[in-house]
Amino acid sequence: RLLGDFALYKTVIILLFINNMRMLFAPDKLLSVPEDLLDKAKTGADAALNFYHQAGFLVGELRAKMLLADFHELGGDLGKAKKLAAESQDVAQVMEFAGLEAHFSEQAAGNSLLSRIEARVMHSKTADIDELIAGENDAKMVEFANANMQALDLPSDRFPVVLRECHAMRTESQEKLGWCRHLCVIQDLRHMERHQTQYLFDPERFGACDRFGHRANIGSIDVGVAIRAFKGTYCEGCKSRSPKATNGGSDQWPTPEVLTNP
Image (cartoon, rainbow, N blue to C red; front, side, top):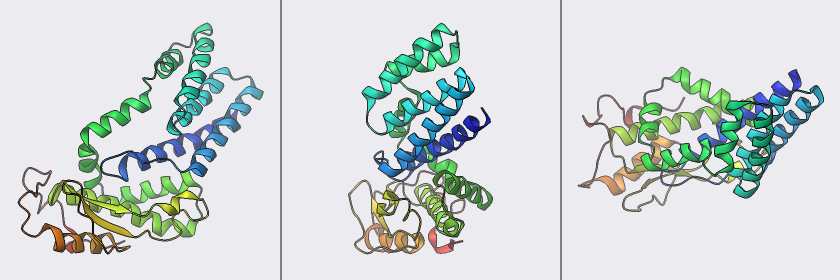
């Protein structure tokens, strides 16, 4: 059973990372999940399921199946997710596991917790998320980076790149609050397609505007440089600039001119 708990714990961390990646890294859509990352997550859930089965721990088996259904949904196979949830719901009902039965019931009906969270995120267009991330201190950025390192099972030498990515996300959120809600940072995410290249190097970043569709032609691995270049080209004199912070945020949320990479 302990092996099942350990495998399930690692799989939950991967699920959290995948959700963060899908919901935070793009301003107007949910990103698709890299196949190798999804396969790794499913393998972890399957391992937990097998360990629990060998130990005769039925509750653990159902929790592992719950995660598997989530991963099928993330991969776009909603039919398989619903089928697995419906089968698991029957078992949970017979064994009178009320909490698990309710979860599987909603999942089988296409109203999973995952889909409800994603719907709320898309509706709010990350407003609440920006406020949360913008106010986090450096210690929280280190915690977030460490969680991502563990979820992706990355070697320690990639930590600086992961940490810079976390700082870049915070800088973007601060810009949305202090400068303009339409300013966003996009990046080349091809490095996430294979484990061998995940955060092996800093991705090139580009400033963009999600209202008028502007995108900088020249990018930089330094998020501050990318944002300054975009603002200098497209934001000067723009009458549609709209900071999320009610007070304009210039004092509370620093702009890249006073930010440095860790």
